Length: 162
Image 1 (cartoon, one colour):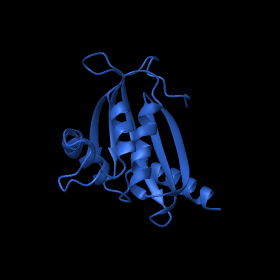
Image 2 (cartoon, one colour):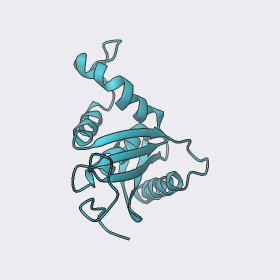
Image 3 (cartoon, one colour):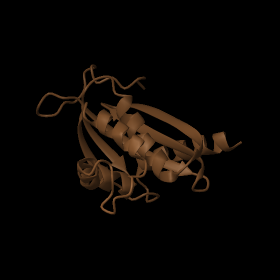
C-alpha cells in the first residue's frame, strides 16, 4: 500500500490526463448529536489509503461532510475524483442545493441559516481543486469500500466516546 495516495505516481488518468482517484466515505455518530467519527478509503491504481477521525460532540451529517472534505484534502495534487457516499444529504447538498444557498447568502429557501455552512464551504473549497463526480451507494448493502469506510468511522466514534 502506498501512503499517502499520490497521483504523481504512474497511475491511471482520465482522457484529459488527470489522475483518477476513487474515495469511499462514511460518517457515524453514537447518538445524534453525540460522539462521532468519519472514515474514508482512497484508492489509486491498486494502492489504498485509509483515513479517519473523530469529534467528541457532533452529528452524523457533520461527520459525513467531514469524511468527504478530508478525503479530498488528502490528495496531493488536482485529480479526477469519484466520491462514493451513502449520504443523500452530502450528495444532494453538493449537487443540488449549494448553488442556491450561495446565491441566497447561505440561507435556505425559508430564509434560515444553512446548517453546517462552515463544512459546506470547506467542501466546496476542496472540491474546486479537483474534477469530482459524486456517486451514491446504499449503505450497509455489501459495497466493500463503503463497509470499510463505515468501520473506520464507527471505530473512530467509539474511540472518542471512551
